[in-house]
Image (cartoon, rainbow, N blue to C red; front, side, top):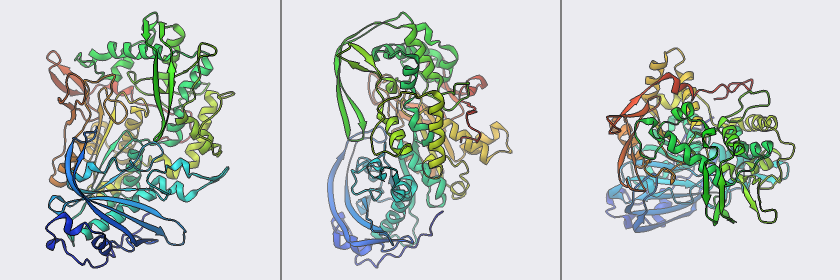
Length: 582
């Protein structure tokens, strides 16, 4: 599964001890001299491709995952090839100034079908003294996404591109990046800590490394991972299928009203009324969508821009929407929230938590008929058309003849075809744990793109697999000793939610991981920073799973509690399948 790293770097012409500034080391000639020629069996670095240029006083804006910062760095790019293949893989490294380097390497991932963040994630490591890197996966450029190269022709999969996207490219990125970093800073036998940080697809890529190459990593920050591709990708189509099957296409404003009423009704169930639903499990137990029937809604006319893919968007103009929540609208919402089941009632997958926005259920307005109609999201449609049916198209044209059973078959097919490369749910993390690795796993409780329950289910699968002989409490404690899951109240996909702006997002997770790995300071509660609204800048605290937040003393004091009834709302029996779904 893994190749043994061999650090065969050339002798540096200038040692770090001689270098007193970034300008001394950040030259193409020096970078070429320290570039490893063959850091892994089967790949060769083209040392003539190496370029380096210093960047001074770079200003990085605040993001969900790190605060604003200004720093200097060395921007390095290089290319390598796979022996026996006529290919080229591009890597980019940002290396901190020698005085700021803290013996850290950070790999960064992508989102959607992008294998990288197009440079946007690199600041998150450099500001903390880590050399940071990204890969283009061999797809032709850093801006070329996987779905653009997946098929060589209709019916023919580019297997090399598939496995590079699945896990191999990120393994090679870390191997080359760590070798280059050690040579660049002349570390010799000194420890270089290896870290990963990514969210969404980047989170899945992080798990791919932890699961397959555990000995190579010291720690990972994994957010809302897009694991379980077989189920996750077609799941985006489920709301549209519900609308199609039930014959009702709710105006977006109707579903928005239902969600706003859900938030209002479930807000205080956590013991604190602040506009944030911290206990979606209690919301499941106590809120009935039918209570929204008859509630009036109004949304003004607007032009919206919908992001279809990382760099593709479309604009739509919708008229003013005025009406009351219908029983049909409430029924559609309730069916969506229940998640996909076969026609005979067996569970195939799960949906987002109540209080997550109904993004995947959004209908489109037809001005010719003055009505709302089905809008097939390309997030799921492309998966079925391109990755299951193997046609080089970006969406399905219709859901005609599609049933809940057909969608379940789509999930089964994707699981079978890509289990070894995109499912990314291997539950035995013993090699990583034995190497002393630490994980901080975060997921927004109101995520409208990847079910929060997906992260819970995988976390529980790891617990049951690795600690099967222990009791629930003992196994939870054993897992939490090195692998901690934090659900973020009110948060959306990889960020805070504009619908619940008083909720925070864990912006300082990476330095928390550094402190855990390097200094043994295991986090109990995780800090989350409010990044919008009236509580801007406030630092909140998150409870580690399986404990759940509950406020006492009139909402002023957070406690982390466990109750069985709430826990059971997160437990799923995927009885639509004959095999266990981790």
